[in-house]
Image (cartoon, rainbow, N blue to C red; front, side):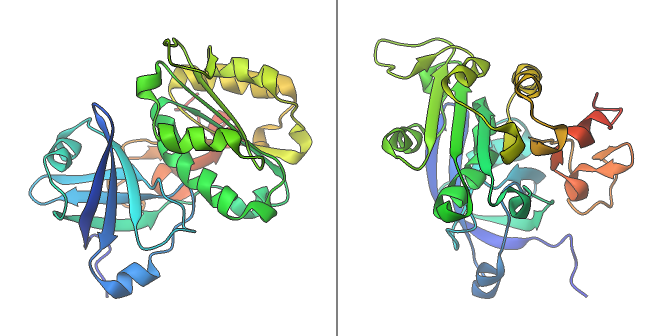
Length: 275
């Protein structure tokens, strides 16, 4: 019987700096069989381990439509990520997963998709973004709203700016405080709602960002007429085993690692420990 806690070896192929404390790690599983069978859904996560240090849950930033290379956008924020940031390209790490339920792709298909990200929240939503663009015929209108404090804090900046000229997505980027060279919007994310005409009955919204952004964006979505079961939220909470055994990520009767990390707003409202 396979040990579910045993990680598979993966090599760091490339490290791409995003800002001072955030890097995009491109990794590839060493075993070709595992590489061919690694199938994830947007919104799922993996457990990353560094020898002698421990494990940490990391959302997958790459789309399953682009296999072989797994991309993880990681902020330096603890013992495991500190050790990971000391590694160089070609270093070997451990990987378990993918885990979690991911976004509700089959429900979203045939509907409009509204992706709303703030700060580091763009990391897990990037997987959903590129999945939807790579399967463009499966979705109606696609809208991206993404905001950061400053232009320097925007993840995947060149990649996202390339979307501004595309006709198959409405890409709205904003910063709290602009610079002389910043040409996009200035203001908080909720202000971007003024630039779009939404059809809540035929649209699913996916949100990830800091708590303060959640508060105002959720309020805006409800004011626009979105039902709570059409709002998808990413909830990360002390995940340690990834398979629902250690109980560290329990919220009431649910486990973030197995029942989440993607929940509807309706689910979250009924989790007393969250609300």
